[in-house]
Image 1 (tube, rainbow, N blue to C red):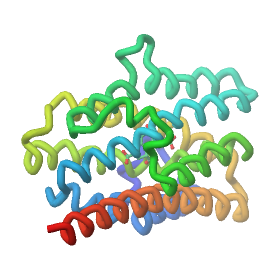
Image 2: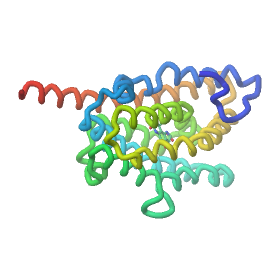
Image 3: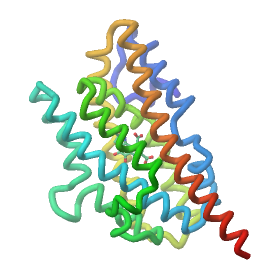
Amino acid sequence: MNLELVPIPVPDARKAFVLRLLDVGARKYHDKHPFHRRMNDGELSREDLATWAVNRFYYQRTIPRKDGAILAAMPDPEHRRRWRKRIVDQDGTTATDGGLEAWLRLVEALGGRREDAWNDRAILPGVRFAVDAYYNFCRTAPWQEAVASSLTELFAPHLHALRIEAFPKHYPWVDAAGLDYFKRRTRQAPADVEHGLSVVLEHFTTPTQEDRAVELLEFKCDLLWSLLDTVERHCAERAGRAGSAR
Ligand code: AHQ
């Protein structure tokens, strides 16, 4: 990771801090999780992909709710004007033009069902616990800390680009419209990261606060990693059962 990936100019005095944040992603971001590596190497089954998309929708549909909680806690109208974009990006301005709807098109393109994606009972317990931990953290932590935890999106554009390349190559049966979500985020995430990073540079200034920001990013990386652990284990156990049934 290097500073060229950061969408805002970083003052010399803060470069070491930003490099510490980037190092968290280099060490712990879920692009390195075995399930994502297998996904982008074309090794997942249709069932695995559908299971991942249905369960990840619980994370996706929680994002605008956690962003609403952060918005409510932001005292500054300028921050709110910038932050509310995230909610519109996901919920859309109509029932069909938001990110949630784009993700549901991914669910269907991978062979999953919308009704399962909306059904909390279809979500794996470990996925629900990881996502609820993020939602409850963002509802209760100082809004600046919740913003800091969103900065895992510093590392997301690379992962979306990998998917946009890998899916047509390894899963040609997936309707191209299913990839719209990844293309949307590639366009939308940089402005979100720009805002989030400006908040973190403004509010995390002492060594102790900088350590806290690193800790928050590690917490979020662990949360994303554990979500995939749950999906990976479920898919492996299902494959094992199918193997033993032969
Ligand atoms: O699609 C994603 C998204 O909109 C967001 C918002 C941000 C946050 O506020 O926590 N994090 C995030 C992420 C999205 N996609 C994930 C993926 O793997 O597709 C990655 C995730 C993130 O990096 O935190």
